[in-house]
Length: 324
Image (cartoon, rainbow, N blue to C red; front, side):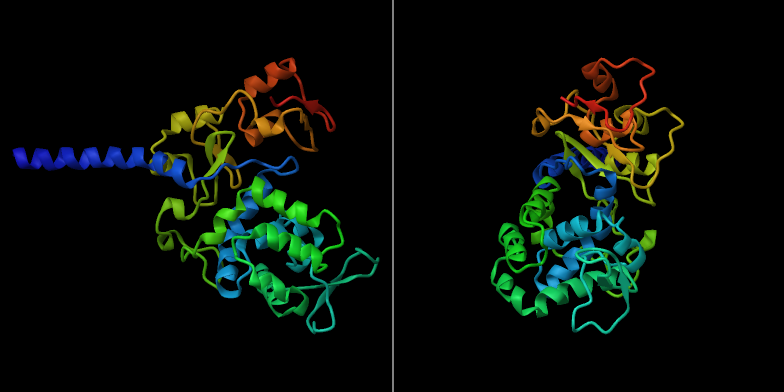
């Protein structure tokens, strides 16, 4: 009897130690994450959806995953551009002399520019890697280390990938603000299978955290909800109760979790990160105060207080709001 009780207590102690270890490990492995001023949950969702594909391409072709993701975010507007939605073209690659496949006409440098059209996002990522690997003008980039994202960004601009004079700076800012360099030293988790649909069934997923990137936004841990998530599942896997999750995210008991929702695992801060000192938030179309609070990891009440807003305030496009 004593032995059984002893084993039970040991198992229970190990369970709570593992729950505690969860947040300790996050502190060690999760690098600081800042949302870009033009970014939102759509950008986070893009990273969630395509980081495995970028890692797979890096391991097979040598293009840093951070560079691939940054270019995809930049060129496709996080997957929302006409090229991405109508042609699966995430990297703005034009037809060129070697392309014999289908194309789409979109105004760019010229009103009738022809861009490559792909059957899938997978094909677009594959062609991007081959475009760089087989292009003579990009050959020097592969002498750089995969972790030298600054060298790659400057090299892409030097080789003429884009005409924007700030192209290198834009890529570097995206990589650093979204901490994409964390993927440059990773091997694929096995969740992504080349040549197959990226969506896999629940039984194929090894664990909750193989599905999620844990971000550290404004000194607060957060994840982006996916299609498999529910409040109960997140609570079960993180050890944070449903009651606390709803409290941290300032939601009522009946709140429904949607794909792409930002979910904080700790209490949010009263002010945005010092990175945004002197930078007010400019309200965009469709944004609510709650959206803004979640984006910067600050409490909704603090947002009202900082800006001395009345309870019935409705944000209008162009309004400037203090966030710290």
